Length: 239
Image (cartoon, rainbow, N blue to C red):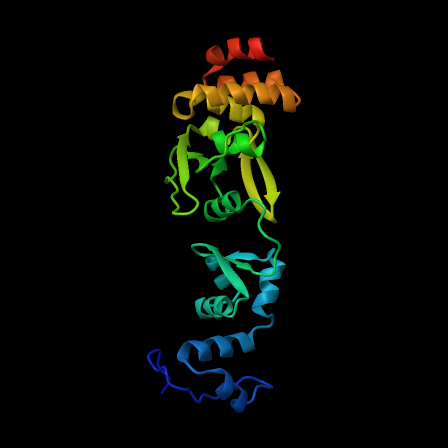
């Protein structure tokens, strides 16, 4: 009998068309390898092809939905076909390097989180800061996300503030939500005591230099974030 604890060579004949018992005996040496081999042989598509159909990257839950078992994922990883990007997220190793791995990883793990504050400033190139954590916003009733790597600094926003100004970008075929430059500036004024007023004022100056200024949007988001009175004198002096 084959059991998960049996680590000796396993002689097992699976009822799979066009697959000989000799091939299985040669390939399968443990219970996990037997399961992986048999299930993989019954699949209409190779696991690698399933990965490619989904941009080369899958969550474990998505892989299981497509018929790829946990053992098959572990086998693909051991063979160097896929790599683990983060907990529960796998990616084909032959894909080009991820251009922004921190934002991609966070967005894959927490698709409802929105990149905000200093991380959004950095994405829009209106800061000289290099964030050492990924700043994200979640709705007020959401669970605060947490990761060992990359580290996350999460903030709960009111519903209006959370839903306003979201832009979606595709980074390495992964949808990443980032607040617009104007919404990000309003958020930075709102959290100025958390991130530092020097960072806020530098971002405002760089925004005026590098972006097409949209005063209407700036004041609209300032009102949503309840910082209109705070922002107005700085906008009038800078823009």
